[in-house]
Structure formats: C-alpha cells, structure tokens
Image (cartoon, rainbow, N blue to C red; front, side):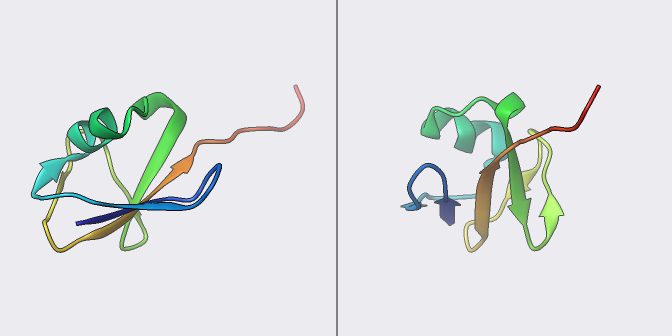
Length: 67
C-alpha cells in the first residue's frame, strides 16, 4: 500500500498490507489522536483494515475556532 504523509514535508511510504490503521500509524510513529486517515474519501477508524493495493493519506487533525 502507499501511505502519504503531507506534513511537515510530503513523504510517501510503501507498506505491505493488509494492515489495520493502528498498525500503520504505530510503524510511522504517529498517535491516532493527532491525525486523520483517509481512504477513498472516507475517514478510517483505528480498527479499519487497509488492503494491500490501497493508497491512503494521513493528515494532522486540526481544530480551531473561538470559545
């Protein structure tokens, strides 16, 4: 599978699948609480299984606004 992490500098990783999202993030050293994982325009949960031929993107979870 191809895993794209665009921030801080765009990097693309190749991994063997299928794997759960939590396993992918652990290998990348990223905590699930601080990112969102996107596959075919869907947000994935930590227990979702990503197939070997997938292309996913891992983006930072950003919130904002006024209190």
